[in-house]
Length: 296
Image 1 (cartoon, rainbow, N blue to C red):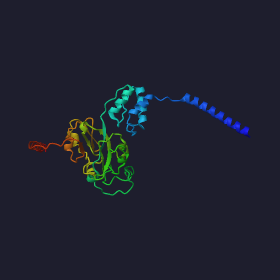
Image 2 (cartoon, rainbow, N blue to C red):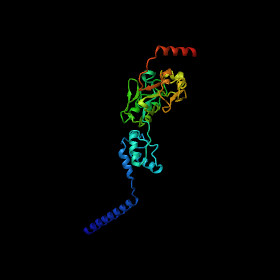
Image 3 (tube, rainbow, N blue to C red):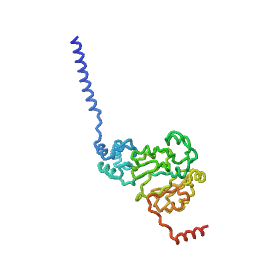
Image 4 (cartoon, helix red, strand yellow):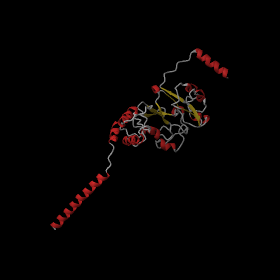
């Protein structure tokens, strides 16, 4: 009996050793040697794993930059929004390439209705999720394109850059925004847009995405874009386009002259971080009135 047990243990031991040897040679045969540059690139990335670059995480982004560098000798089109230009310069230096300077982006809220300008006509009583409510009704104020105010965007932000203002019922973005795009994806009505921060953080944009005609749009929201085309007519840089009863300002073409802001009858166009306007002199007011009378 002892001999049988001894032989069984010996056989199992030999089988284990043989299996280990086979597995070792198989592992050596098929092992994948990872490019050491991946670790170098990954080390300079911010480790936010936010997905703003279009990849699952920073490690995946590092692998993509290596592939692009080897295949295209360029990392053009790849961008880490959290790290910005400084991080991309470090990545490019590791790969022996150069990185293009890109304008930093920030999220803007293209809706200004909320509780103040689009008062409730009904009361919603359901799941506190914009994605859920979007499939049920137009919104408490009646605008089918406006912010629902339930905070999916706030939940999606990992940088404390966006919060819901409960007085207005609208989200607000602060300087912590890294343009990861999580809030853009979370909003079922696509009212959040990534736009260039602009020189001195100055931006002009139409804070409305309602494509209804002027009458219904104004009925549901006092600051809705009514598609009157006045901004389009005064823009000297062809930065404004009109489509589906809605104006849109191209941030690349816009020179921040603010003429569109002055003529908008519903205050749908927002100007951020500009100095206060100088009050018009009596001469300017008289000239303006004379011009208006002559046109009439």
